[in-house]
Length: 139
Image 1 (tube, rainbow, N blue to C red):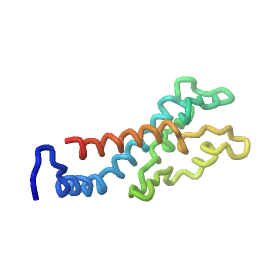
Image 2: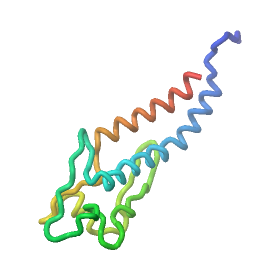
Image 3: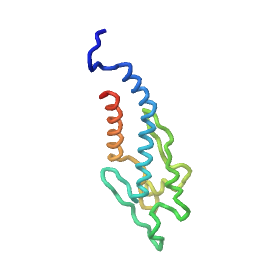
Image 4: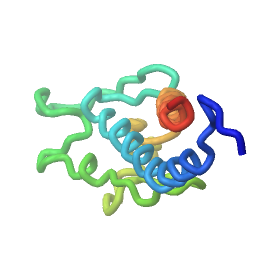
């Protein structure tokens, strides 16, 4: 084999790619988790653009964020990364039965989506994947 300057380092790149295959899904899952947790700070959901949540009705504490309960934000704390593989990333609200009522707007509850499909998140994840691949193949 003739070695040339700038040679494609197949074995080294394959090793780096295998390493990313095991770590990148978790990185992406954590990015997604943080993206959805940020909905609580912003008090709204971002898909193609930002959609603020409906305000609470009645005499409530205006200093408290909308989906933060009186006892400390159990809904927000329940959002967890459950599975991160190349085939799928699963995260959700664990142990909070009323999460679906807020997220989907069931019954008389207005929809206050905090987790779901988001074009903005998809772009961020794709950008991160491209960045990680560029680190491998452009060195």
